Image 1: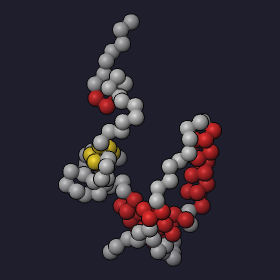
Image 2: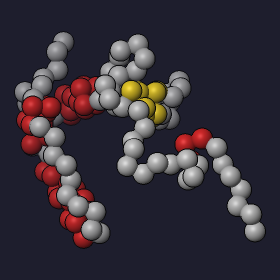
Image 3: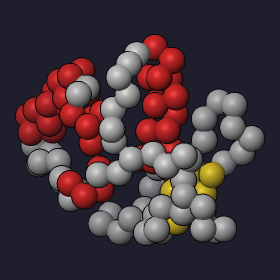
Image 4: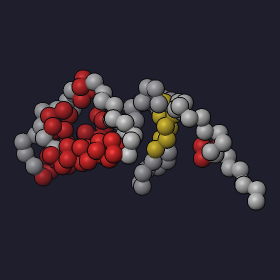
Length: 119
């Protein structure tokens, strides 16, 4: 039986293990189209940050948070530190990676989480 070849990013023969693509594509229900992001910079071809960057997602979370709770967290890191369910899920993920022999999660510098929303 001859296997059918596919084209595009799903072609297993074209995949080069160890070499990440230089772009990322995302979309969600309700979006007008795909978002193509430079994987090195995290920005689109016009220099705008991704709609999935920490700052944008934190802004959306903060708008929802302010509708249902007070007080308002000072910044992203403080909000993240206060999220008990997040930390529990993260530890479960880390244990699963370790148990499957996939190694440890790579931690990013703490400075990446030290920002507040600007109005």
